[in-house]
Image 1 (tube, rainbow, N blue to C red):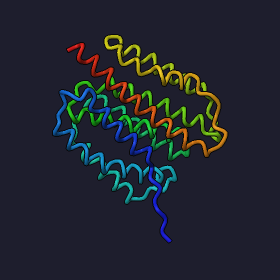
Image 2: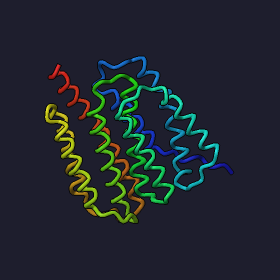
Image 3: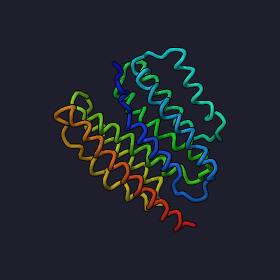
Image 4: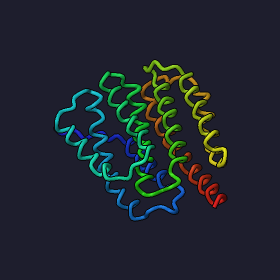
Length: 237
């Protein structure tokens, strides 16, 4: 009797939002490359979905390694910049954490690695404004992943870790946005959520609803970031 595969909807959802973010502010980008990137992402995400649980279970064989290499091939030919060290470092750390059975931090950094691909994709489509929106997105999702792990009943994560992570993120973004403060408006809602994370969930059954609420907030964050960044970019033209 066959069983239908349970898809990792969160992975695909974040992948699509990360692609959209890589396009911000949507002008002065290479449209042809933006279109070429779509099929590359379309096969990158399913492979990430397939590989992640195998790495978590430390059941990687030579076929999986071959699959990873095939996935990396188009990225080898993409333009290089020093900021690519961010996703590369996150990928290595994620592998290391899963291999040492540190699932919680592996999940957090694995999620952060996925959204850090906005740096790779933004570079490829020649978006010269990609860096600041990418940093907003990466820090937002990193703390968001910590927030989710904290809320899970069986995770032993102190809420102060979530709060400290977001305070540091705010400081970093304030410093980076001194000449471009309008996008700071996007930090209002997540600041309320992350600085006052509330109590843990009472049951694992509530995790699904937490994910749905988080997805809606992620969409709002992207929309606000796009609007404020477009407005601030136009002001400075």
